[in-house]
Amino acid sequence: MTLILLLDILAVGSLCVVVLKRGFEGALPLAAFLLILFPNESQIQLPGLFDFTTQRIVVAALIVLYFSHGRRQRESEHKNPLPLRYLILLVIGWMLLSSVNSVVPSVSIKATLSQVFDFFVPYYIYAKTVSKTETVHEILFAFVSGTFLCSIFGFFEAYQGWSVLSLFPALASRFSGIAGIAADRGVRVQSTFGHAILFGAALAMAIPLALYLLTVTENKWRKLFLWAAILLMFVNIYKTGSRGPWMALVLSLAILLVMGRGLMRKYLILIVTLAVIVLVARPGVWNTIADLYGETINPTTVQGQSYEWRYLLYDISKKELSKSVGRSLWGYGPESFYFLGLTAPFMVDGEMHMVKVESCDSAVVELMMDTGYVGFFLVAALLLKAGLVTLRNFFRMSKPENSLCVVFFANLAAFCFLMTSVELFNWGQQAYLLWIIIALSMIYPACSKRVSSPLAVIEPQSLARRWAEPVVATRK
Image (cartoon, rainbow, N blue to C red; front, side, top):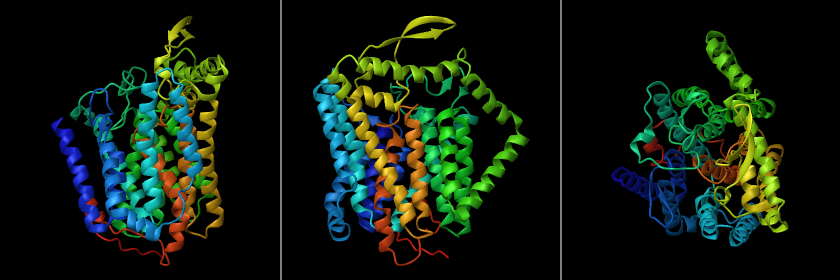
């Protein structure tokens, strides 16, 4: 408890100091760093009320600072309407309707309020406050820096057997019992995240961001840091032992390779070359990947059953939602899945058994069960519009400024792909990353138009000084 209190005080205090020195917009990169860094275990539990995680403390501090220091700046510099506002309001409204008709109304209402506070509020603040390309780059660097620090923790977890989560009180979660050490794949690093899959999802999004930042800086020390971060993040995503994030990263890099230009493609070719060298020099790495693939398509293995379970979840959800028109429309209520007591026939050790459904390894299934088909299609429309707008901006903006749109699009595509097999949409650090990326992707073209000088490059300083001093930018 003492450690958590100290971390909360440090987080809020550092935000206040940076706001006083650099203004509210200048503190947004630090907030992004803090949101990606702290585990869910860093929380103060109040029975019957909301859990006060460090992330929620950071968001609460942002709200207070926004109204005390940031609103005037926003009104004078950024008067454009909130992007995606109608779809977001529809999603929130439908979640409330689902909560009213929930099988566990109190749980669902709390879940809805939590999602609004945790994700839609940061989206609003970032979308209404960020006004400069330099700030966009600083926020991306903050995400990469936070994921890099998590990767350092992950490195020690993989090779020394020490987890940073051991510093925090043990906390039951929806992944309890399957995180960390798994009998089928040994130690799967999760760093400060709730599960190795969630850590892998964040890495799959952070690596493309780091690649982009490499293309907009010419300082050798900054490049060295970014290359070190990329290499360490690759080691960590391999050590997560998670198939979904591996494929999401491949999807992201393929998008960048096809749509990226110039340095982006050169760096990708270099990374592919390094990957081939590693696979040749360390055949055990290739054997691990090949064996995991072979076990995935074998329904008699643990990995194969895990893969088959995801398809079974879709069948379960369709069956349950078909029981009534109302449930098919608005579902059973947010966060209600684990209260339904579902069972399903499943093959175990070659025999068919009725097993209790204790996990929902799909954000798509969870959305359908929680908010019905209407709620799912509203969220899908929201994410689809964000992706299409980002893609449209890529074709409309001039070069090389439009290259960041490709990275945003790759991030959104990777996250949507992972939603089909991972429950990651409405909780965890990776969800904060998603909503801030969506906000940045929506306002980036307007920010780019405000900058008459070339794109920004942040000089290598200590992380604290980067957020406490103005940024000087140069680029060829």
